[in-house]
Image 1 (tube, one colour):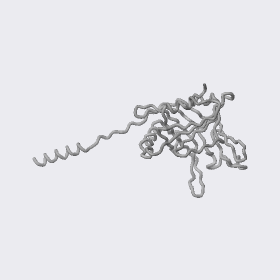
Image 2 (cartoon, rainbow, N blue to C red):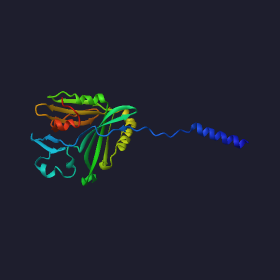
Image 3 (cartoon, one colour):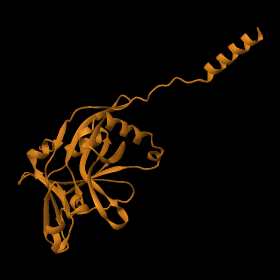
Image 4 (cartoon, rainbow, N blue to C red):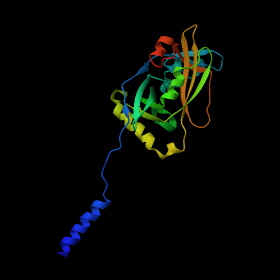
Length: 237
């Protein structure tokens, strides 16, 4: 009898301290609401000359520009993109805007001697409130505007296959970022330098994430026409 009572006690004690295993609810991500897949990248070099490249802000390589601009790590330039995408994302029943930047990337097999360049892809995600995103849509035209947008969270995922990239994988990465204790101490922001020319119907823009000190460079940007940019973010009045 004592053994039976002791066994029942153990079972009750175990059940009282055990926890239900419940998965944390993942963000729910929509299909694309906006897309930009082409723009010309411009950079003013040390000689005061503007150089350009499709979907890439090129490095200033001087007289070796044409020879080296697609060689090894020079191929990714100062900045580049494969696409910018806009999606809606719901986190804990609250709707946010997700800006997704897919880009060319890579690494050296032998980093110390800069040998064995391996091309690859990466992506960045920026999650912000609709009210912050609306600042882009309502940006003033015909003057240089520098926006500082508060981010709910930010992350970069390096060296992955974009062919196998799904909303579920992105949702997992967003959750990792939200659960990272460092996010309580680091305030990420998304800067956007943008100039909308109504006369020429072109947009010059450059996105970059920062925390703390912000280094602005007005001598580089991407450029595209209104029609193309409006497929990404509607800024046309």
